[in-house]
Image (cartoon, rainbow, N blue to C red):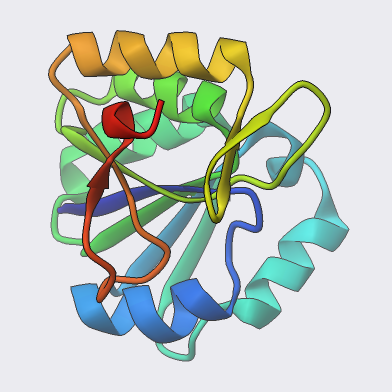
Length: 156
């Protein structure tokens, strides 16, 4: 069961391991990222950051869509992590079960404007967000589960 899809450019880190995993009773992390899936060093470092007793899968976006949609994986309590709005948009296009996306951390970069303490978006990010909202997908900003949900459209 898909518990949460989170955009966080750090992917697996302390906030995810020590707040989101226990709050959601997650038993599996799925990193959906083309670059990471092909980088053995990144895969190793993410493996070190995951909590004990929690499975970690690292797949390309395409393979992650197949994994989530596979009926054999429906028994997993799944937290999906992507590092960009673009990847979340691609995931949403292939996973009908995905109805909500948490924006947790997207650092400032060239051409991005800060819309909250931890979220900086480019114009192309905002276009993709608007497409997701038009499809009825909830997009909410929270760094940790105890934070109050903020609808992204109120911050744009």
